[in-house]
Image 1 (cartoon, helix red, strand yellow):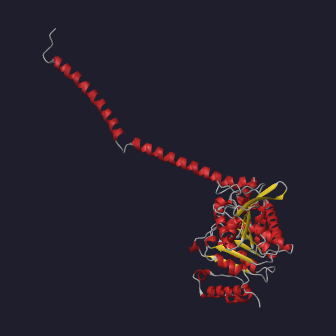
Image 2 (cartoon, rainbow, N blue to C red; image 1 turned 120 degrees about the vertical axis):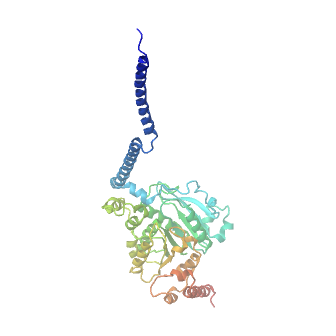
Image 3 (cartoon, helix red, strand yellow; image 1 turned 90 degrees about the vertical axis):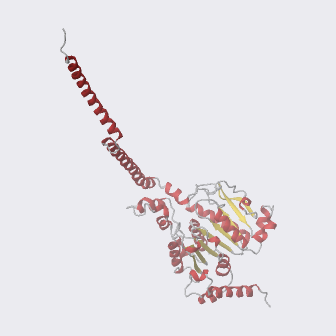
Length: 428
């Protein structure tokens, strides 16, 4: 049957129209997907950003929870295990510098030093260094133990040095001080307490004091009536005041006590230490941390010991000391100056301004230290006659005038030199 003209065209156009409409619909959907994918401000991107932001916030919350958990756990653990606090006080496990051979002090530039070991108690050996005065260094080369023992019979005075926590007797700032003291004509005897360096045993306040007493008596047997001074630094000042108190109670005080960067007692020092800053204002700080120290029988109560000491005392402290605050050293001086047992003895406090940058362990760098030791502390410079010219009390509070070499210091130094000359001159 013949179709009417145009009917096929009509059908085709109709079918084609449907196809075009369907195709255009699919194209629109494709365009929408493409636009959505390419649109940076689209809803998908916004959702992704919200998801990422939410994930970041969740991670920050987790970190905060962990930090808070650790913050709470630390004091609880220390309270439950107080032995941890003892390790933090002594820090004897921190051996810096680590790769030094304590048997070879010459490797540290101390080529006039003997290393040896003593036994203060059965089963405990402690490492000791004896540095002779630098004027004897040439003679000291390749000498044996007998020669070093006999060297104590020289006219040179002796300093027993008690170091602080952490490190060993070979610590750099300690070695530098030995060199300074040796150059000034002193024998320097130092050692590592039990549990430090290559010394045996476990640390404790009682054990540290016993070791120091043993060394003092060992030296005293060899020098007789020659001057013997005790020098303590940082934690070693607590050991030093313990030792000197015991000696004074026996009626055998040392010739002088030098305290470098001292504190009043271990509780006040622990509360002032930078490590305690994050917990200092925590409710129960004393109960969690300070009582844990006391539970280990650690006190180092220098503020109590000064009431039983009867020998000259010199305190050195840098104003920029961040480990042992300057205020604690000044407070200890104030207590010592008021002590009845120290009445009639020289009690001196010498500050070092922050501008010098000596901080906790670099006072040995002071160019004035030799003058301080020669003319202020140890020499026969008629302190009782000349010192009232400088101050109304018993302190050498020199401040900036000391470092600018003001007229007071020049006068005092000149008088010291005159008296030293008269004292050394032969009689008629």
